[in-house]
Length: 577
Image (cartoon, rainbow, N blue to C red; front, side, top):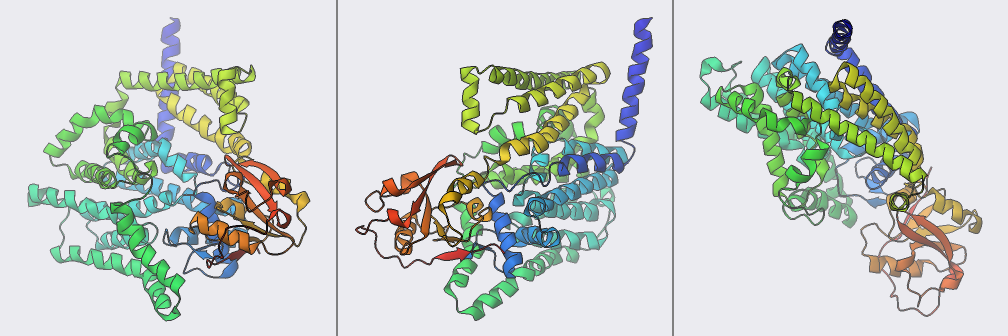
């Protein structure tokens, strides 16, 4: 009798949750906004990429130079300016770097989420669209990038618009404006990050489908000539920045601008893809090291859906053929290049979600998958709890972790582990499928608040400047050698530097000869100091930041007799306004 009373109540409760989550886009939007925006304003930009983009955006607003991104007065040719423009706009509006540097990725995440929901609804049903949205929101890599100031979330949003436009034009209503929109935002994607053209790869499976399917099977009809306008539309969007940039370079008679043009148009595009010089990984890197972890929980569903996907290909269902083929083509595209980072394949994740969501009822019936996810969350929660307890007990093997990451995370681990364990109990009683969303929400909410505060001090050089403050007068001139952008972004002082891309040998030579008068100081890593040129007894130990040991060298530490040649490389000066 007891079981027959409780079980219906549990099912009723579970059904209410399902009805709430799948009734409209509102709950999805609210939860997404909470997860993405929680913690915004609590932290500074963190290395490696965030301080660079924040500094460039801040400098754009301060100097009015928006056409050519510059890093502390030195031109920055590694990426086109669109992403930096978006940060700069929010900085201009808010006056806060802590808020503005995260806004583009956050808004891009919400835009991507809505587009996934909307195209899923139009291709399948409202329920499938909402399931796709929830699956994307609770995918690890998606939320990670939506809360990180890297270019990839923004360029993924532009590529999502490209894929959305092609899918809607080809499979939904055949309205040409969606095709125009797709190619226009491919162009915007290119001047955000060179790979923004990748949605055009979806035309390959579309041609295959059109060739294999009979005319009567095609959802819409369209004229052949309209396809060829796409690349011209993309080039027009690219020209919105490239043409003014080329005109200014041609009229400037400036070697620095000419080098910028050649670097951004050639080295950072074709050369970087075909002959990459960093982040070198094997061809199988994404399949073995990125997708299994960063695409959780979707990666667990992939083996279970191979058979249904093959069936969809045999029945020529373009709703699966186009997005799934595009996922494969994107992974192949990035796998061919020797240079690889896990974040590169982020744009493929929304299309994978669209390929998984139609089979949600089939997946939800898999008890083995449900149990595996529950056990996975239980193991993670237990591990965090045990690590927290062992850390508080000062167990040597665990205490080494705190020294390595430079924070004491034990209460942080206990907080996530304890709350997740309570969530697991709730999921165990009502619905084990809730285990992952609960753990995921606890993890990101705790990290975005407690974790941000805990990590911010060790992820910035503020402590270095606090240590140096007693030794520096208001009129002191300070130069950085082999610097990282956060040292300039967060500096309370005007700063000199000798070029981020200047070879270290020439930076050292320029720094030595720059320090020619009293009240001039160098901030430099200890292992770079040539003791034949500087008296270490006069040096000031600033401590560690970013796992590097920093030294302040006053003018008095400079020795007159040194082998450094006079450098012809420029000296850059930057002062916050």
